[in-house]
Figure 1: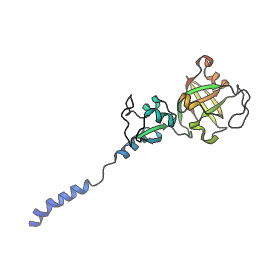
Figure 2: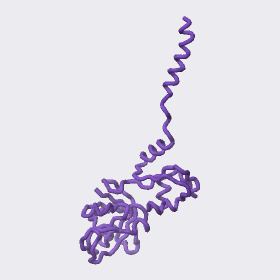
Figure 3: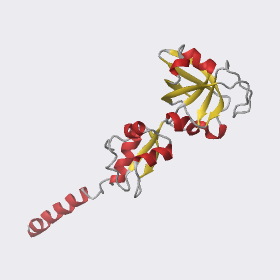
Length: 200
């Protein structure tokens, strides 16, 4: 009887303590989990002195893209915290069947050699990938689907666009004149357009 009166409450306390013994997830683990849910493929951890424009420049993303990937950043970018994990890219850099919505510009290869080593003509249905998807030329010769306003074309990866990311943001591409004309009959006046593209 004495045993049950003395040790029963103590036993109950030990059980209650052991039931709560698992540590809570760290803020870093919660942040990583939240980033994975958003389909983030590349992250950056904020260090002292970081500002949004420097991070955007470093990873080739626009201000709008950085804020869309990281809704917790305020409009003035005044709430960055040292150690904060930011998403700086979504959809893998190697394609993998991901579809990207991005800016497409056009160019005239005019019989020159593309970065993949072939002679390219203005009428060819080809695409130059930005540096964020170039992957050392590993996609050369692959067929990519590009869509705009219900129109869809297939183009061959044949060139590199070194300035695409800097000019138009992450995932931007450069289509040959022939390919762009098939998507946008007013491409000369439009200059650039928003497209969806998929690389297998």
